[in-house]
Length: 130
Length: 159
Image (cartoon, rainbow over all chains, first blue to last red; front, side, top):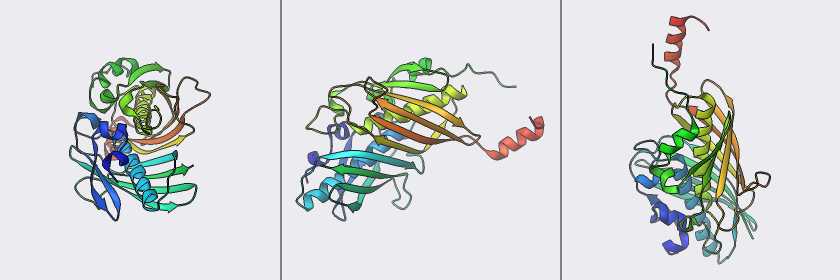
């Protein structure tokens, strides 16, 4: 899918970009800058959550497209776990569809910086489809 | 021993907090406060859309709004601006915000322990009785070091 189909106006405005693909899912990234800064030289928790949520939607859109399905997505909830501080460097995020049903999708997302094995945040999302 | 800092006031702090960084970019504004709660506003903005088919604020900025209102509710409650880190933040979306509507985030700090702080709140677009989302979060104090506390207690004696 094209980046503009995977990223909302909000996501593009924040500086989120499609950095690649892994296991058929879009790998998203955002560089550090004033747009995402909370306490000095660190990511704001809200910006990290925005990246996680965007990666979750991008994964679901990709999976639905692969199955030839079209659906209106309705967010139900997101739970974000903050694991360590996001430093002043690029952050990556990848979503994984844990379960895709006819009416609902359960998605897990992880965000990391230098080391993939040490995520800075993770999220679980439920999305309903109509 | 130490110089007493003025009590944290969310209204005053907003003048500095929202000038730069992520919350400045979002254009957050202070709206109201109580003893243990703070309400902030996320103004409507065309480039914060989540869905191209509807002029409705994306959910990402609403999480940022609630995260910031949580932190400020904690400082308003404790009276001190000590760094806190979000451990866990959950957002349940009840419905999309109305078209071209600003969203208000009101968060209360309902429990403070030595190491953890608990918050809950709602996001609404005018009527608090009909929320856009509910949130619940747990924060931890960043600077807390148990050894330091023990040393202080030993010097001062039990309180």
